[in-house]
Length: 320
Ligand code: PBG
Image (cartoon, rainbow, N blue to C red; front, side, top):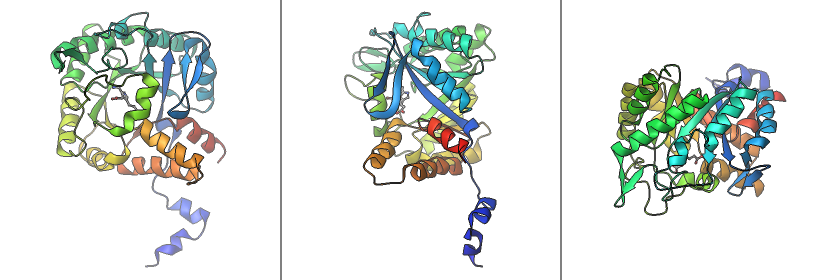
């Protein structure tokens, strides 16, 4: 055997290539803020912006042109409180954004992040009492948020609070109100990662006291991740997510082998900015690095990748 025979030129390399990135499998996150005429770059995430709704059209038209049809919506509200009530306000930022998008760009498939951290003054993903994050009280709020997104026209909701039974609670609430067709992509194995740092700037969602260790997963655990995924599937998740992607490729691999639902992986903000900054300093070939990273996530077994690189990848593909 001489493996180099199959590496001789572009044609033979392409012929034997095992994994590709398809734009159809990418989800692009979008941050929306209250206000007018706002398109502000997120300092910790170069080339990613927060948009007010009136400024969304250009972005959405570009996505459609690039054949990116699926977005993950995050809202940045102007008012926060202890219970995150703005998260289920029918005129809240996400609800307004969904309605705007669905009215003007019905071909866009809208997924919404369902969580409290961006909407609470304390910045935790659940209701807090005496310094503790309460599980079952939070479920009621998460269900209300998901329902309000469904009423506004969301195609899929993505609970990311890491509360036990969040998928079950949301599925029941949606079904109870006739939203059988609204799907759930659960942030199933969401780790207590340091790679969310840049996002917390973007969504202004950093916890004001303590950290998320009592609900997000310990970064060293493998079996527990599989347990979380299994529970979410039993509770009714249509798609399960592993997050972040790069430090957790082993979990993506195993999950894709043993579970019969689509697996998504979130290539998170820290993973994005790391590459952006290296490229800025000229330490890596940006395009090659991005494709290498995304392909590794695909090769590990992810069917779907949520990534801030989606637009750039689509542009490069256009020029292939
Ligand atoms: C909110 C949420 C987070 C991310 C997505 N939804 C952050 C967190 O848990 O603090 C992170 C996304 C990213 O880093 O790109 N629960």
